[in-house]
Length: 194
Image (tube, rainbow, N blue to C red; front, top):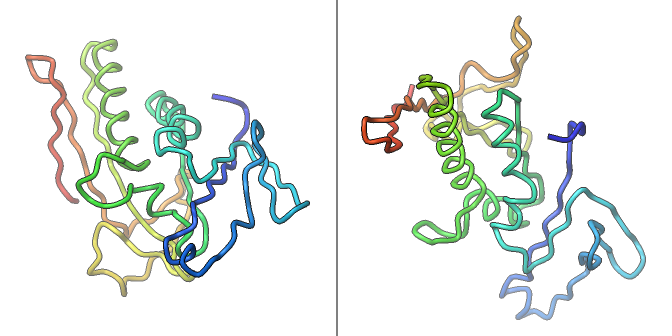
């Protein structure tokens, strides 16, 4: 991992069919061979990564997230935070286009890599048991929503630091995976909401 604590990537989505129909114009583009974005004709902005409309889900994941998952398994903290206005492509980048497609988003890829890395680590360390806990929240219009328990829209959520310095929310639903290798060396996981 690099010494940088925060890296920023920008992904520009293609025009939507409706925007093309109404003859909207592209006003932002990636400067080729750079991590810069040009707004209009002369305003340049620099980022750690810049992806244009033709960038694949795989390209975004490999460039920005894959190393974070590796360092997570080694004990580091990692966060992927997507920000943008409604319709800018956050859900597509995180989750993929629609259910039942082969174009997986960041969440699916993280889950796959995490369990593969844990299986490798377990083989190397003579069978350590691992528990993975997942929370999934959305900040929308300055309100936090628990996306693992949609019935709790009215539940008051806030992010706080506890006495040990851990940041989180005690009220969020947690999905727990108990992870182990069976005798045939196949990865298995059993999960339950907690």
